[in-house]
Image 1 (cartoon, helix red, strand yellow):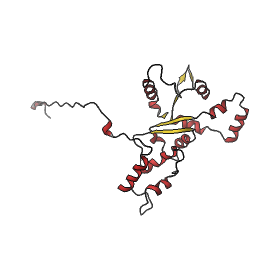
Image 2 (spheres, one colour):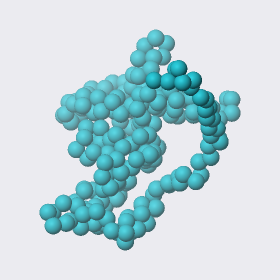
Image 3 (cartoon, one colour):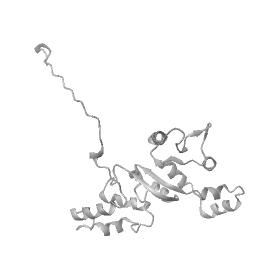
Length: 215
């Protein structure tokens, strides 16, 4: 689970509360402390948690500090305990991205860092998939394995066209329908009608101000 730092504890609590006592998966929050010390990659390998919760900033920071391939291979060969080999062998079954719009920019470091992870499947959660412009949704296709759309240009050729100044033209009703049908294959949208909120009570108090107190 990758999410903003402000909701890490909320996700941990939600996961734990979703299971009966004794059946909850083992959850580790990276960046938190275990027995007074920061959790490391060795701790993860030893504890083998079912769920790892981290932040976009931590993923980005780890990716920035990745060394060149030759150094990595040297460490792999010299690694007597096999720690590096075991870390490289860890595969994420489901990479869950909460508030994914913060990492949908292809040229951004967060987006590239997420793509460098090894995962079988991805679940993207967002209330604003099209964060700034409608074709922002194209960037999420990078997390779908084997998908042919690998750039904004390919996406535009499939679903839209350029206007007179060579800028992406707004979608027509027909084009929007085609895009929606395409995204229905891998998108679950929750319409507002499914959200049941408690009734709102509105009160109003009226009173007269004596003439001597009026401005």
